[in-house]
Image (tube, rainbow, N blue to C red; front, side):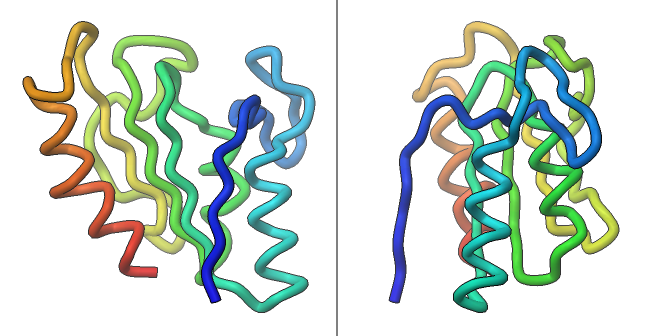
Length: 123
């Protein structure tokens, strides 16, 4: 059984121990952790935002059954995730920085379909 949630605000800058970037609580990570613990689910979180969600990366990076991919503008707050890389202690965090002004046709579509989606489906 699969499910999907499209939510705002994600609270994606709040880490497990620190409120950050006007985010007091990380709703996206909390929902993912709840699904993993309550339903033994595998989860994938795709963050489509101007900013990199270092809080989600911090929290979900510790779980084998989670994947987190972020497509975000660089340079921009929080000035992290400025190179495409697999990160986290489990290599389950993918950062995909894009330049300001990138459109769907000029590069965003390729990053989304060729990199982010296959990574998220691999969980």
